[in-house]
Length: 114
Image (cartoon, rainbow, N blue to C red; front, side, top):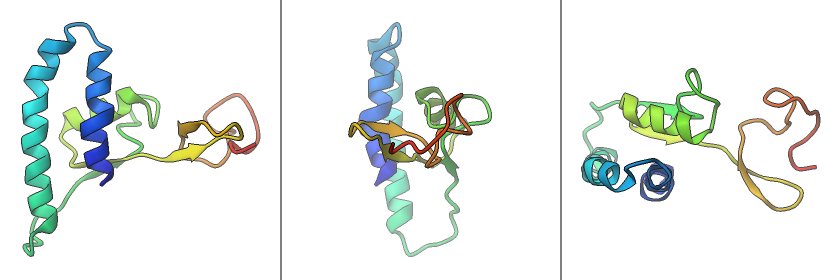
């Protein structure tokens, strides 16, 4: 379900923020739709010979984890599923962050929820 959300909402949004967005969307979207259908078939199949590759936090080795660039890079690398961490801040904003605290990924300290 997270993959479908990513492919249908987040990735097209990212493409709309780039130059030549229409050209890029026309080149990539059909491939993503076919890929989504293929992955859903494999997921729902009784045949368990296919091993899905998941990228937790996207391609965090080449971009900041949970960033749009990390998600885009993971998809372009051919992973099947990008798993992201959605958390909520004290002011009820949704953010993508793996940790419960901001200590590791920012210069701040403390719980993200505070």
